[in-house]
Image (cartoon, rainbow, N blue to C red; front, side, top):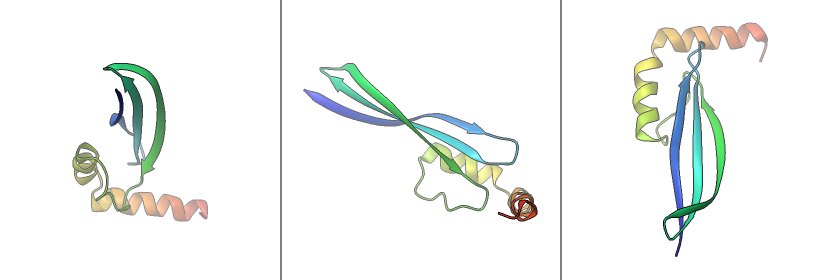
Length: 81
């Protein structure tokens, strides 16, 4: 029997308040992993994180304060992005 297992296996917070999320997709046959791949994405301060994994939501709620969001937006504006 084949089974697809998707899990958030790594969450990192970087200096500017961005949260890097790595998701692992594993294919298992009879409980033995036969293949896997990874996908990474970033949750920036001020971004909507309501669709993220519960752990990511909890981290974003505690880290993405008004001050962190303002500092991130100011840094992006200063770069002209």
